[in-house]
Length: 327
Image (tube, rainbow, N blue to C red; front, side, top):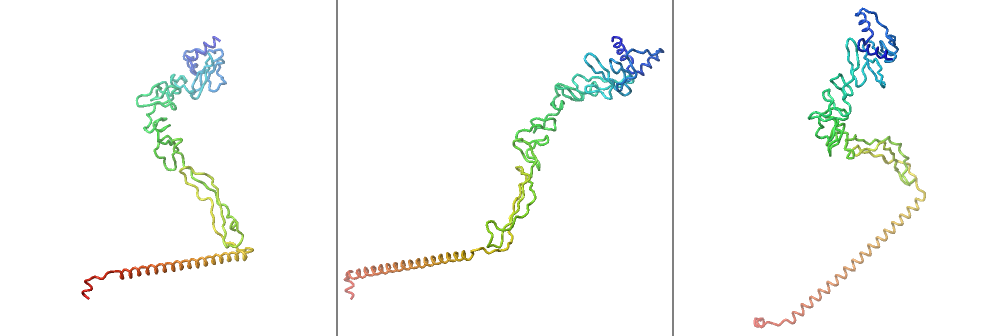
């Protein structure tokens, strides 16, 4: 095992791929020495040379060498691209995967992060614990973003509000005093929700024509039709139209049985009413005549009394002396 470990270290440091080893050997003008446990007929995909204990020792062209740690042991793996948290470095001698800085989740190179780990925020390729002045951090994006717009109480970035100030309604990350057309305000959610308009189904067939509760003695009846409400409208949606209609319809008239007797009774009732009305009118006329006669007698008595008082006044009045001398 010690020999295998020494062989692995020597190969990594001096000849990462097998071709390089051959070139190095030929440049020294000495034959290549076969190392125990190293094979050029590797079964692992992408390996050019490999070790039974340490996996790939060199990779085929264009592939990256990545060392995976398994406990205390490292295994070489050849990959087309480096895994998350590593970036690839190419050189004429070897292509290797290098780990990103500790604060980076992913990176382009050692000086440029593309995503930060939790607790750090990306700004201009750097992962920082605190954002520069004028910027705020976004825990969702793990980036430093512009401050929220004035109408936002909290935001995901400079253009997307997650909660609006009191009295404003949220719609697609924006805050509105008045909801746009086709939307209505929801005071419970403080959001603009889409209006829901009433939807009704098709009309039913017209009902039979005869008038309800009657089967004879008329020329026209009524027929009706209805339709169902398929979707109730929201508060500000278009209301539902009428869901029932009534129209008149002609029917074949039928004579009612016992109609003559009913007509006779109706005429008798009308005659009695006419007779009673006539008797009442005559009685009221006689009453008015009695009242008029009584009034005329009272007026005559009053005139007689007045004339009598006047005559008595002339008889008792004394004769003036002057009037006697003139005569």
